[in-house]
Image (cartoon, rainbow, N blue to C red; front, side, top):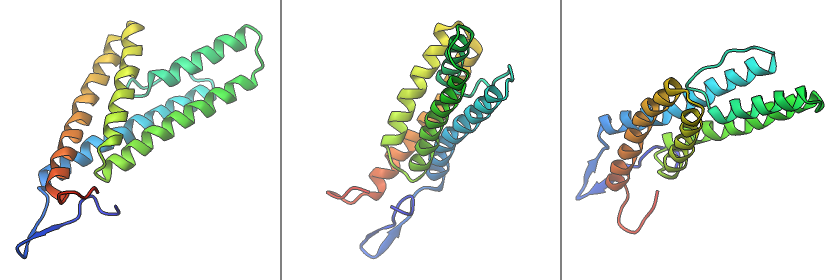
Length: 164
């Protein structure tokens, strides 16, 4: 599982994966890294008292941060902000792991990551932020392309009865 796709041998001919499909897979997987990275920046901005955020970041971490601020304003201990940042980091790490495993050619991180990112986009949509929801749709387009490439490459590289 160290390389993206093992080479297969048929009648002494080595078949190599289509480089365009590999690039498409990597591009889709890399979107998870962008999402995680910008969410991490959003969390750092929140932790240090900033008021801006990136639209490619996750809405759910921003909701957690807003709920934390609201609770603190209502009298909860200020340590709640640290708890919110830790939750943000866990969610961000999850997306980074989606990127890592999707980049290895596994299909499940694409499926789970796409599902979570769709739900996250719906949070923006419910909040009326059409620009951020639209950007989520844009990112999802490329992530889904990566997923489709991973499926094609999986068919190419997996001998019958054997999983990667």
